[in-house]
Image (cartoon, rainbow, N blue to C red):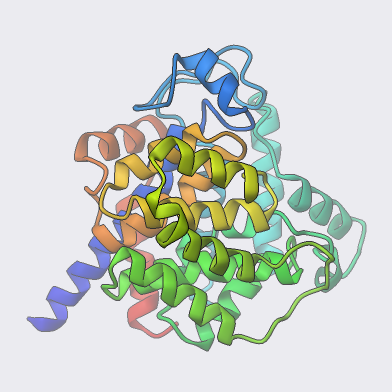
Length: 343
């Protein structure tokens, strides 16, 4: 009975992580790549629920409320590849999965295609560049945005760190890309173990800091050290600010772009501030401007792993799953099976 109870708890947390990712992503769909001022102009103020995107949305114009973006779709692709490969992850097969996904998006006339680092890496792979070299300039957040399935499938261990690395090596084989992916995967994994939200964030930073720094060097700021710094700021100096000043300071001093060393620390800081108000965390994430859908997706995955599938409201979870036909339950069960087998 105890084993069955733990399995049910793990599946609930897995559903929470996947649902949180999708809900955050869908909330951020209408605001991605927009400034806070443009968001207010387009939608009448901060976002408080799912919205149809305006026709001048730069990436996802005139999309239906509740629609997810590449963040969720690529995370589910990774989850399905992990399950199919028994946790080993054939990185070349996953690269082919991503290329097929983009071709499908192009056929639908979508502008929501592969990110800059992922696209460049996969094009290089197609030209015959070895996979260990294709991601050597990838410092953006493409690995981190799809990292939640790794955190679900692997308990905190060297296997988790290696799976995180393998999941992003073809596209984001830099210290920044790998650390960003590991941070998000570890936070989800600690949430799966039952950690509270703030505990999961801090232990993810500690876990990542214990790993060897691998990947290609870049002169850009460290994702790990900036996340550590911004998390401390959120709990101390930033804690005394009201919500508006907190978000303005975070935006001005840290940034919210697609660079992993901005979006991942931003997600950790917002998640920490709103640890007891998970839906407010997502609304804050999608209203701050910049790479809003990814910041909210990462925050939602961590919060969902810690708090379960209905942390953001059952009706919101149901709506996003219905609008996007997401196989959340089946994928959650498959990933938990990997975790229980010690993949």
